Length: 134
Image 1 (cartoon, rainbow, N blue to C red):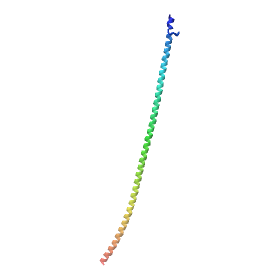
Image 2 (image 1 turned 90 degrees about the vertical axis):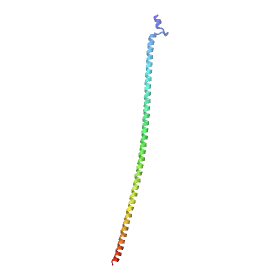
Image 3 (image 1 turned 30 degrees about the horizontal axis):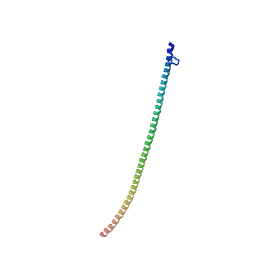
Image 4 (image 1 turned 30 degrees about the vertical axis):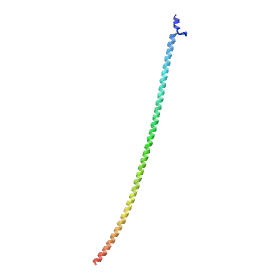
């Protein structure tokens, strides 16, 4: 009877020993599957994080390049505006210098003409006063 109770599963093997061994290997399989799933999830998460970081760094470098290009463009435009303004000021100063030179020549001619006219008037006055005195 003891042998019939130990052969209860019908396979001719002891049910108590095999159940524990089978349950032990099932537990091990479940543990291994859980461990593999955990590692797989961890790998996927790591890959996903790496991809997100890579995309972020790429986007940031593109943004920095864009900002840098815009700043250079602004600097170039500002530089061109400043250069144009300085050239305009230089042209105005040259024009002013030219006008001043023309004015100085005109003043010199007027002074010379005034001096000549003054000498002529003095000569006329001298001759007329000389005529009255004699």
